[in-house]
Length: 538
Ligand SMILES: C[S@@+](CC[C@H](N)C(=O)[O-])C[C@H]1O[C@@H](n2cnc3c(N)ncnc32)[C@H](O)[C@@H]1O
Image 1 (cartoon, protein in one colour):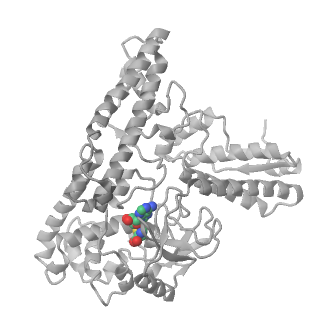
Image 2 (cartoon, rainbow, N blue to C red; image 1 turned 120 degrees about the vertical axis):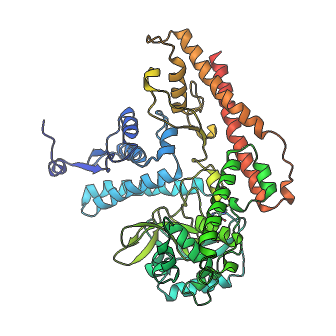
């Protein structure tokens, strides 16, 4: 039967709204398709006009569910249980509601009378849900007064060069400087706009005498060149980015600067190994550069500006302040963006999309994905990272429940022929089971892909027949016991009492202790859920 065209449907009093459907280019396409099929969701929605509010509500919910699936990232999808329709994370929720809002808004443009009423209803409801996302997830920081002369000069310099902003700078306990809205800002408003000419990108190298030296070197990356450039530019009183460099901290407190006490505190955690490896890698890189650049070109790379400590400072600058930006030539580059670099991160950020220089305005815009009230701190998303990444490269742990705080598991994928049904996940992980909505057996909050995977390994006993009920219980018990056997030793390695008193410790030991506490909390939740699952089985 031929499908009715949209115009025909409109004549018959039907309203059609279409979400962008799942893209086959998306590497997660198959998994998302399976999930949307399980939930019986489609990406095209039709409703009679007029319809009672309950029916409109139902359709809006279905639209939001489908949008959530479209916007799931890999970690969210791993933990998205079949019986859970979301919300999956603040990030996913903001993206999904943003998509729904955009579709409703674009349909409103040409709508009249009853259709307009329906669309207005959908718009108001979506905006209310949006406001609730923020309200439920904000972990406010405490703002203190501070002497902001360097920041004032930076803002003044920015404004004279075309920066537009609806933000001011304030100081926040435990987070340093941050940006606060100077008026009520709505979704879509541009909180900050930085002209392309103020963005520190590879382009600055073309004006630098370093470029000739870099051309002689094989294999030096653009990021390393920028790092070396910024080490010298920081001390250049003639620099056109002088106000930017003057407003940077003298020291960065990231995991890469952890002292011996903080590292000792982390022993037994994965972060301990990660930090040692990251630091060793940077030291090796420094030693190689030192040999070829600093000794062969001492006039350009003056030894007093290129110590190991200054190299580490520049690495921390780029890791904690670098932003991935698509420049006018369409290429994605890590850049330093003056003023935008003062925005702090939140799990529930206001700004998610900011990565492309607008070719019409030749500027980088920071539009809001959720409203920000006057006086509220305006947060950016640094990305969906686990705590270990934030500690290593940014030197903090985000407040609140971080849905990306996962512990990766080193479980080998079985060969397809060794199992009844190979899971389509090749890597596995856990996170705090308090984040799971499926607390009931058999999963008890443990991730289904992991249970499925272990089941498929254990189930295989050369017998292709479906297991009997008693064998099924045996398999289930073996699955949970395997999980306990992985996490019990992890917990034991973290369970000795720490040697340091948090109250009188340095920033790095405090952060290491916080990280360790978080790891303990995640592992003990996994063990508690496993114990409940075992009790249920007996
Ligand atoms: C891009 S800068 C942001 C501006 C920074 N607060 C400053 O004063 O320069 C990133 C750094 O800000 C701090 N930061 C950002 N978000 C934070 C948060 N939610 N909690 C604590 N510190 C945060 C961390 O020190 C991080 O390395």
